[in-house]
Amino acid sequence: MHYEFPEGMQTSSLKERRIFYSNEFNLSSVSRWLTHRGKIKELRKKIVFAMIPGRHSNIYPPEFENIKNKVVIIDDYLDFEDLRNYILRYLPEGVYYDRNVYSDIEECKKCPKCYRECWDCSCYLGQELAFDIDPENATCPIHGTINDKIERGIGLSFCMYEFDMVKKSTIELWSELEKDFSDLKLVFSGRGFHIHVLDSSAVKLSYEQRKDVAEKFSKHYIDEWVTTGGSRLIRLPFSLNALVSRIVIPVKIDEIEDFDPRYDKRCIPKFY
Image (tube, rainbow, N blue to C red):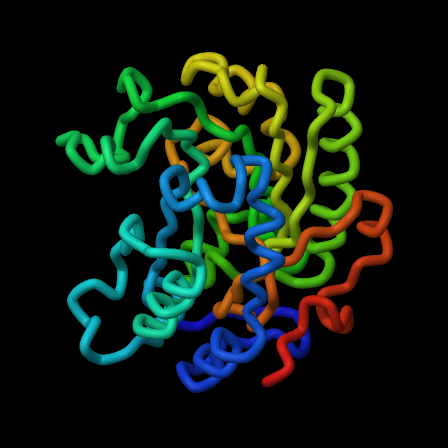
């Protein structure tokens, strides 16, 4: 498995992941970022987390060989420090949270669907609307289209030309979304950008309405599966994107034009 990334961006080893999550993973920042989902003391009952051990990096603890490509759900954590303990056990390439809004995840655990296809469940209250803007979706004059890259086995690769294209597209998409929504958050995902739309009207959109939204904004290099809600997981801010050794960080829209993940110290882990 081979990927090509901009200078200085490379996959984290297990040792580096352990160093990051032991010393640098900021749980206070995580809890503050998630307060839009409720009071900190209530988050344990409302938010589901998840990990992927080694699907894309092919780096994972050997005891997790059978689940390296699987999504590992974390819904029985006691508090955020316990969440850290889970992560340190698996040392995953990515940590996520579930955008679905649940009334009580203890009730969800009893459901045979258990977080899958929840649209009609009584515990399902909605889903954060999100846009995942990825550089590999941009057509590059050097590396070609996303399909070209997939055929060569480097589908998640990207260059700075593609990254600059998605920066521009993120700014344009943000401007369009501001016409209809007021509660927007922007996150650097380690490779591209995530726009979170937290307005209650957006959270309550149906699956069909989300499909319309995804189609409307498809020109902006978005992963439509994320916007429609088919993929409910999204990277947890302040976690490590181990595929490229970059920290997932909230950013402001007026910072994007000059943002460079190769050199911005906010997103570069200290082990690097």
